[in-house]
Length: 479
Image (cartoon, rainbow, N blue to C red; front, side, top):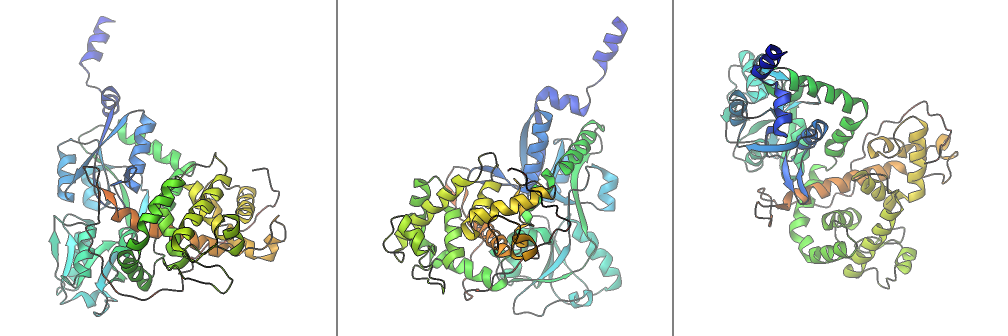
């Protein structure tokens, strides 16, 4: 027994045991809207959310270190200064040999982007003779090298101190002809760079994973594999993908330019009112502003053919219920819209967590709470989760089909419009949230992106391709 104890005492703890002893999980990441950033309410980002859930699953605290570039990320891993990298890194054959990997949790396409007004690249030979920027140590460098063997005239500049946002800024400002970025990061940043356009997908699909130091044992990697298997099975991973990427790419080129123009020229006239109204009703002012933009493009005299009017486009009956005498008064309209949305939010069941509760409230604001409940019933009857917007949004469009709405309590509804409505507001909110990140001292700072003017109102919102589920069994349970 003594010998056994001495042997055990001399054996070094496994990676997982060491993390439990320290009660801290150290990760290395990078700053980007799709990865990690400091939001108004604290850390946010797809990669951060995954890592935070993993740390919670381990019962330890998450410690985040932000790298300046990808070279630093790999340097930190090689020196064993982090448990793993959660930084939106694509798997390449070389990386797969040098590091241990988690299961794949995201896919994206490498995209060539160009500036509006310049020749659009449609095929690899269109890259010859044009300036191209790429991030050093990214998977795209290997893609370009492979392409260069077929087209020797392709040349590029690899920048180690640039990230996706910097590349998009360079294209937007005309400092380079082309750049290579991942489709997921392009979608989430598109609205910031209204002059950037998609060219073509020039390489195979990328797969993203966490990277673990090769020098460590497999105890933490195995735990990560079990973690991803669990969140894949219970729908958490799909929900996170939908939260960060499910509403992207809904702003057209014209719509994006119009929005950033209006942020500069219209929003300042009403921002104080949005803040006051949001404070009164305990809402996020940026969400309230996003609703106002979706409704009227922040035009206080907006009038629709159906009779709704004002900045928040209130109906006459709703305005009267809210005690508003003049719907064209912007202050009254914003305060009324805030009060009305707050009332709708209170109707959403308390057990539904955020942010899904807000997405349901937005859909109810557009199409009516009863119709949203009908869609939740359809979703649950099909074995989906009625408390997850990612599931229910596929069933709202069914309310426009007689086959389905004839069996629901509240009947026909233009459910797909409600889905697009929520997607648009979420996109506007994302832009406002990213532009108003708190600095390290707690102050709110503008985005590093220089917003460009231009564009005209985009009256046609991009209709989403919503998959219509089949084989529903309509035996509505109690929600």
